[in-house]
Length: 246
Ligand SMILES: [Zn+2]
Ligand SMILES: [Zn+2]
View 1: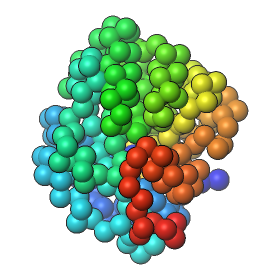
View 2: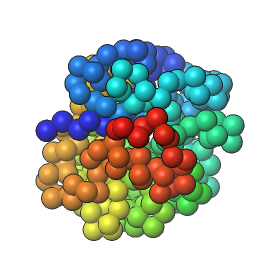
View 3: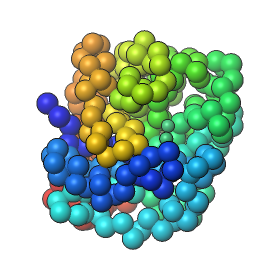
């Protein structure tokens, strides 16, 4: 089974990625993906787009050839207070806010500090999904993070590319995260973290982690476009009428 929803993709607006939104739409049509989020890196990363990239995202059509596009960001958690590099003008134009640790912006700290930063980022109420919390370079208190994620209604990502190209050693942490989210009654989000369109919707490795721990299918944001859209509305984001048919 292939999910029809992918919450995490990068375009060449971040120069270490290689595809355009057009490329992603073509790939979505080829694979039967009906909704994806375009989530370039927040401006504090070295080669990320300027804030204007996000502020102007209103020009991106909601639907192209039957494929829905969510305007998003993968913001950086900047400090232990959970600040992110996404200002109000950017937030006003965006549909989905992901945030995570990236070494260039927030150098890995000790477990307590990393945990505090991640929980504070969730507590502030702006972030919908924490990206790659299983990154072994940023040890966290998985139990505490999963409890906080359930409390603040934030999804924790099981990032498919962590098992392929980056963040070696994530599988053990991600299995523990999936278990902890399952037990806390929270949400997971599966993201391909594509940096090129060909991997859009590739979530098989993440799904294998969920299968390992009998993760409940109805707590996976990717389960259907409606599940993801309802989740975002439950977080206070406006209803998007153009997606009514999804
Ligand atoms: Zn990247
Ligand atoms: Zn990332």
